[in-house]
Image 1 (cartoon, rainbow, N blue to C red):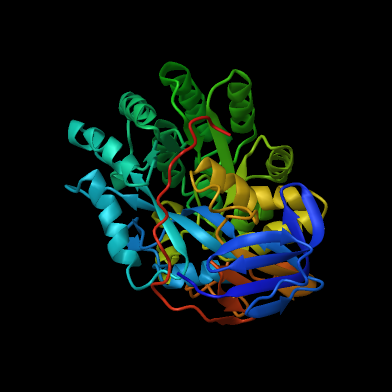
Image 2 (tube, rainbow, N blue to C red):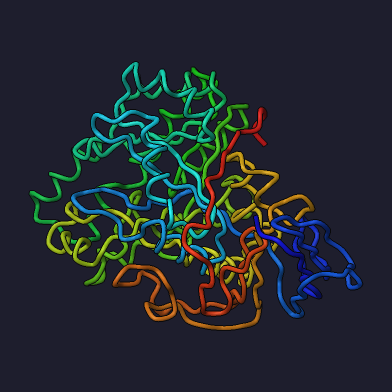
Length: 462
């Protein structure tokens, strides 16, 4: 535990819907008080005048050490959490695929091994079921009990051994519901993809833009339609990751109005880029699934984020080397899907969201911190600056302007998808449980200080 006391003085604190100049009193690793506390006697005083004081961001969608499409992501628990911390992130949840022949509980042990001695910030696990047999399903209650109550399944990627059929998805959803968990879906219709891809390849349409053409919006909305039906049948709590379609958003909105317990996130890249970048010569930088969409869909996604129909925004960080991305130089279907974005999310959403007037400052805090903490069972310890919470704190200079590039970001990839994006707002300091981890352009934390977050979902969905 971090010892000592600290007063962060004179900044503008965002606490729920309140934006006010206040002081923050930290004792040990928790926030003790928020208010006019200038006279408080503490070991250290941090002058935050002119700064925004925000809760540390929470990224519930990252892929560290991820084996996929014959490669492995370059972000491990050191490089990945370091980049995250530079991006204001103080908690992550990482996906852990059930390996061939491995048990569901093994997915947790694997991540404890990977994080040991490396993680700079706090971390949790989403187990991913790849083998939906009885043995696996029987371990669901134990996995929930061990603090990882959110399990993911893929509705596509048959050739990568990830596809789970609908009949099994329903069995998994029912077991998770009984255990107090939530089932997460990668929602893309596999049959449509398996028809479209060979067709395009045979026609010689092999460049990056055809990855997006092979997965038009109906590929996503068709899968979401099936998920909504599963929600009706199982009454389970369901979550759709990386929503990127207008019809999909409408389906989720209607399902919620119907009273079904179904939520969705979108990701930073869908809000910042459109599919035009895929037409560039280096378009494979932006190959991800679901693919980037057109500007009308992007506008609809921003609207959904602003009004709460899309609950939150994650990075879906999947950082592969340039060599690996180049597997797709001549054929889009060989390119590992994913964009490194664990560091870019906070700054990009603040600059394009708050500064541009698309979302309010309190809504920004909700989408990057409060809602993920609540939906994924980390509140009230995480996601807020309320007294009693972990002292996970970001100090942001709201005026500073800078440009994202391979040189100004700290991700471990040897290329950058965010080159040339101009940002207003710059993180100055990041604290994790009261300990300074980022100071200006320096990471001052020791590897291995990050702790496993034992999560437990609220009985009623917030």
